Image 1 (cartoon, rainbow, N blue to C red):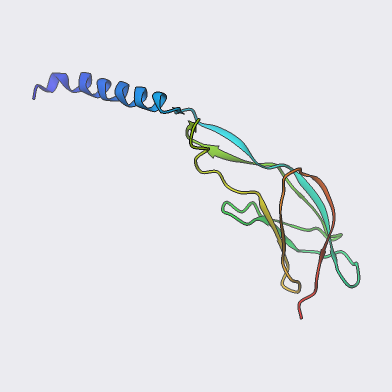
Image 2: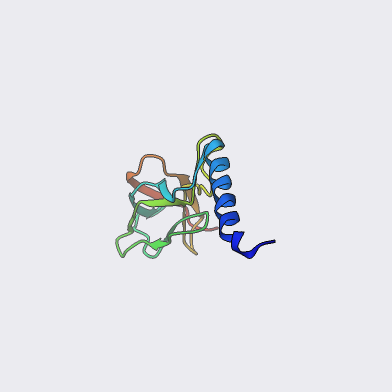
Length: 130
């Protein structure tokens, strides 16, 4: 094989891969999509209705984006986005992570929900363990 043809062969292979990718509906453009909109809430005890400080609020699927409730039981989970290396028109989005939010505390039964709309979730009630 002539070594002077290597750059030409590499460019031809790269062009061929790009044509196949575009023809299949895959566009190699890094981009993001919404994973979870911003959501705020107030975590309280089911029995006493007292605020729960230090409750862990996080996206269940990795990456978790964990935050904790403040002294008054409030939290504000910022909008999160999925990162994609490419867009695939026919087969969905690769590496799409769900938006299931879990709230847990060592003294309480965990609670979780899918965040679709975002905004203010209001009071979220946790039941004490046992």
